[in-house]
Amino acid sequence: MNMKRITAFSLLALLAGCSTISGWLGSDKGEKPAKLVDFKQAAAFHVRWHEDVGDMGDSVLKPALTQDAVYAANASGKIYKLRRADGNQVWRVDSGFPITGGVGSGDGLVLVGGEKGQVAAYGEDGKLRWKSTAPSEVLSPPQAADGVVVVRTADGHVVGLSEADGKRQWLYEHPTPSLIVRSYAGVAIANGVAYAGFSAGKLAAIDIASGNVKWEASVSRPHGTTELDRISDITSPPVLDDEQVCAVSFQGRVGCFDAVQGNELWNRKLSSEQGLAISGKNLYVSDAQGVVHAMDKTSGATIWKNDQLLRRQTSRPLALDGFVIVGDFEGYLHALSSDDGRMVARIDTDGSPVPSAPQEMDGGLLVETRDGGLYSISIH
Image 1: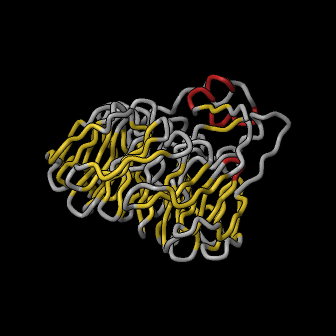
Image 2: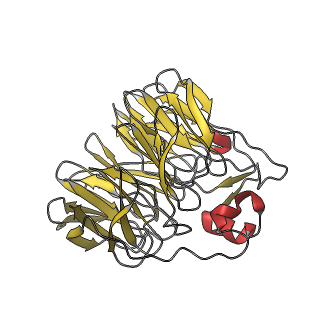
């Protein structure tokens, strides 16, 4: 199959003026990103430590956390172990290939992927344990659990590799349309099951021991008359709690499903490339226009939405202790109140985009910018 892939940025250039996704584009009238406005600050961010780990290029690389360390990587192939408490470097290794997927971790392994399908596993001591090869480019962090390393590739494959030596244990193949969005969506693993979203709005639950599919469901279905209109890809990782798993598609819908059986609980129209966060009774999403929504996770009903970050390429949210935290294309972090969505705090980083969701760390958060700024930040 002569498969074409398009990034979010090339999609912008390619589709300016297309009415089907004009909102995500900032409309066909050339509307600019919203300007940041002053607000009454009710909380404050504080930088605990900051390190530079090198830029991530065109990829979306995110750090991995273990009990005492932070692992980060850059596009040129370097992997860093930093002390979680203060950011001081413990070691640095060179993978020998450009890193496009990482960093993943689990069961004592540190994992990265490359543009030619390379998968490399290191111990927490920085020593290479093994290298393997996935069917195609790896754009998201490999994940390890229960003796298996689960890798999602750019062409819709999910492969299970042995944690011991990297040998392939199983392969899941998902049919891919002729035109897809370049996706950095990884997998979410819980209770021996890997949940992954795919092109055409499909969501699958895969047993990681055997590779057998437990269930498949449709978050959304392609519609329209052209290939571009019919793009309805899940481009962000699913989120889950003890009972349900939720996912959202670009140019499509958001929905939640029973985690065990895959039965649909609810579904509603909403487009997002960045993705979701789940916390308590709420589901949070940054939509394709940059609007942040809070929804009831049991029904999908809107609780609040904040459009102050319209067209600012708002990142996937982090829900943290009464706050919903997102980054934007200018390197700002914004904290919204989880109660009503009002803006309560803001901090600038290094001026480059925040392409992936901040992560919770030690009562605060960890965030990496496209230029490689790694920040440990508290909020009070």
